[in-house]
Image (cartoon, rainbow, N blue to C red; front, side, top):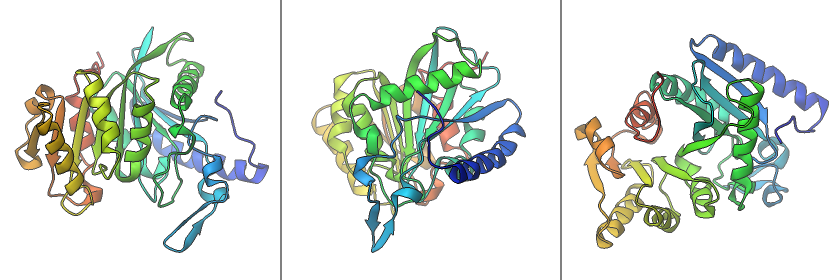
Length: 298
């Protein structure tokens, strides 16, 4: 169930004030319904980070970085969903949280501009910490329960019917998001149709390969840079697909045309941009606009 987590009255007040400030911005965007829910099926809290996490000699405490179970839900006001609703999940990278990532990478703006008849969901992982660990979302069955909580939240806002089910599911993320995305597709308890990695293919390549070969309809897009740490792994994965005689398309971002996004299910896009510039201002929108599974707003 989605709910407010019992983390102390003072903490709740701080969180509510922060959410209220953020939602003022959301209300100013035309055509957007944006709200937060709390789900016990997000990454944290989790026993794996009960004592926090030390990185580069600094302790990132559980209380400050691994105790947030919030989910940001973004939908077009004219969402058309009855029996099923398509879901786009975005997982942020290191040093971010769901709200800062939505603002920094203009995710709401790009998503609404894509005119997809779907819902964008940002579930909190490691908050403002250098950590790719996905917590409870790495466990089998947790993501399925998170989807259920999201559907309950949408129904409570009367954006979907009470018995609405998940339709197509797309997982996207930047940088350190690769690990939680890989673990979700590996567990395979929800029909994830597509993965979009924005300079995020650092590891877990075997899990993505298994998912790709499990279903010829699965789509995979990897956009990578020279200096973001993903260059070698992206080339390695494309090479493995070539060796396995699995058709994939490799292209320079400067030469990419929209027809190629539609025509190919496995794409490796080399970008000359910097690590934090591959998502916005337009790439997320471009990928969504040319996504074959998600329907357009009528």
